[in-house]
Image (tube, rainbow, N blue to C red):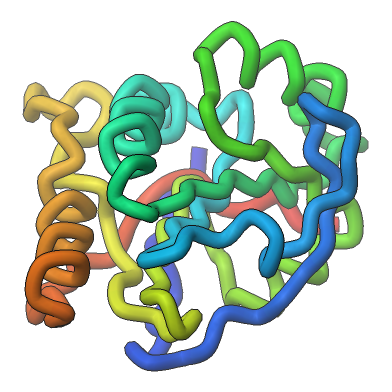
Amino acid sequence: MALTPSSSIEIGTKAPDFMLPDVVSGKKLQLNEIRGENATIIIFICNHCPFVIHINEQIVKIGNEYEDKGVNLIAISSNDVDTHPQDWPEEMKKHAQKHWYNFPYLYDETQEVAKSYSAACTPDIYLFDSDWKLSYHGQLDSSRPGNGKVCDGADLRKALDLLLEKWEILSEQIPSIGCNIKWK
């Protein structure tokens, strides 16, 4: 596994629009239809990455806890399924159901969406405000597989709370780190 940090993206960057298939419902979903009223979390993940497996439970909790606050979470897998067959849409659907994903899990077959977001790793986490402007791009928290720190989503939660309560941006944003996206 290659440790890859998330790319540096300027805060305030507008969220690129997209339309991708949701592996659970089978419907094509457009960002405008599934974004949150107050904020939207877009997270690039995949089924097999140990960094994503490590945070699965926490992202489901965050999705549940912030839904009533007008925040929607959207997960996207952009991995090359020819080299990583465990990330095929059928496997993504099983994974989403097994882990009780309460949010869309979208398949980016062409990898164009990942490229438009400059996504680099799994997980790669983006938080956009109600105007679709980037307010946070960083780690979920400081836990990593095997480092002994509790996975509590502290960094993303702090960014969400600042955005929702004060319309402020978290000043310290530590890049996410994980497996690189498997490019074609």
